[in-house]
Amino acid sequence: MNKYTFDWKDTIHGQIEIEADNGIEAERLFREMSLGKRLATSLTDTDKDTLHIKYVDNGLGDIHLADEWSDTWKKIS
Image (cartoon, rainbow, N blue to C red):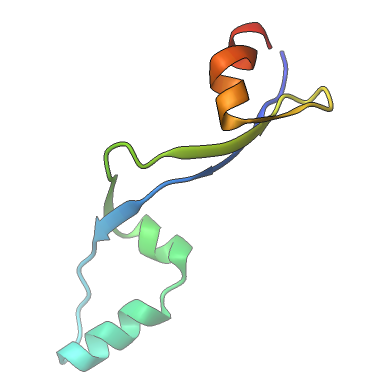
């Protein structure tokens, strides 16, 4: 079994409920959350067709850009 490393990005969005005394406090609490906590406590989704692979390292010392990977290497690696 081989290891493949993907460098990727995607657009995500979420919805979270925060209990607070007012809107200012709620926004402060939201902004102070780490991304990990925000993601863990939110309902999340991604925008359609926003996943982008920058490159793939197939573990053999070869790094393939997204087009190279899609067109050739993912079929034979």
